[in-house]
Amino acid sequence: MNLLSLLSVIFGVLLANQNVDGSLWNETYPKGEILRVDDLNIYSVGTSNSDLSIVVIYDIRGFNITQTRVFCDRLAHEYSVHVVMPDFYRGTAAPSNLSLIMAWVASVNDWAKISKDLKTVADWLKKSYNENQIGLVGFCWGGLQAVRACSNLSTLFFTGISIHGSSLTPAEVSQLQQPMLFIAAGNDPALIPNISSAIEQSNMEISKKCEYQTYSTMGHGFVAAGANYSNPENVNAITDVHKTVRNYLDKLRNLSVSLSINLYLLLTVVMFAFDFYL
Image (tube, rainbow, N blue to C red; front, top):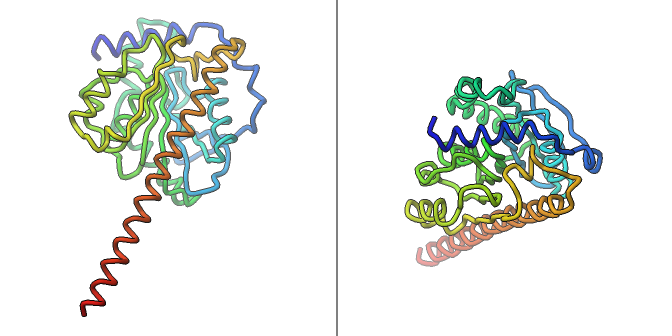
């Protein structure tokens, strides 16, 4: 593990030991349920008005964090979408003892296992709910996994959203095959030009569809495990993040529909011209 990755994890553990209040909004939105798919527990909330679903990849605090579930509940309710959050860590979370961090990270950071879980979830969503358009939202550790999924599993996921993602490097993002929205806190590494330039240089078409936003007054983790719902500024920032996420998804989906219509019209014209020629 490189120094940047280790520092990101350590910062997350220190954040995990802070006493932040997520209970204030815990009952604001309809709650989901925990389902079992193969050996995975999955928090599932909401129903989709279309064939869209969102897979949330949590941060190192793991599966049972109130603030992260509130994000899922709110996104499902306000966007009328099916949101699922798999328990990739199988009931564990980052240990508070920093001497145990390296071993723990090695046990959960295996991309082969993570990608297998993501494939399982995508297949389940398609077969059980007929949801064929699947996006990703990743927090901290999950932001990096969203990048990797949009690089290596691009046929399964049409976009990813990294929210205060950790360990994002030019080498990682230069592999992207699907566009992403990157959201950072004020004390996260800069997205522009570090991340944006790497994507632009590797794939201009993908770069044109990527977006970046930094909340300079917020600290790392402010949307998920570190969200403090007793702080009005934090609450306002979270509300703006939800708006940004919804607008980005709408923009990508409308673009996809527009391209499909244009392709249909083009094929219609070609077929008409071919019939006329004959």
